[in-house]
Image (cartoon, protein in one colour):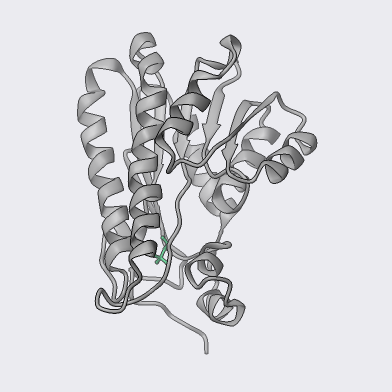
Length: 250
Ligand code: 8X3
């Protein structure tokens, strides 16, 4: 079978990294994107598959288009775009929240994801094939206390995904979203600005999802037969019933 060329944003850690590792094991061709060049270089060294690195921040519109346009000819045909880059910054009420946190979430999770999509799209439309997988969240399906702007950013991802699926319907491009619940990654360390204790308390009282679990779900979407679009896939730890109901052990 022909190898797939898969572009992953936010590939240097968490779900992005686990997804890159899984597809590397499967021998696909990977375009790894991220802000942390050293981490990407480490992955390239580790991986036995063909790998191309792109070092940019999805929030920087010009950098996004420059990076995608800089792809060498034999890397330009992208079969699968995995829009994974994104973060939560802070967990506050609207009243107490920091505006820089809001900008970071809207600029990265929403606008950044849209820029990368727009930059990658022309060749998928031209070839009338391809797949786009957006990382949504349970926070994009339900709002939880103090989730306000993070939830808004993930609701926007869901709406954008639905719109994209409509617009790309004539072109045979598969548009998918995966919506994870609690996944044990650097997510909470970023959200809580390096507060280890607070971050650990999010995951240590339940059997949280691991990044590899989400990577497996993404692989299922990619490996579904071409006539099948796994439009939405919500993945929760068994200990989590929805955004707010969690069976914590202590
Ligand atoms: C991450 C899941 O529940 O912490 O998107 O918002 S949650």
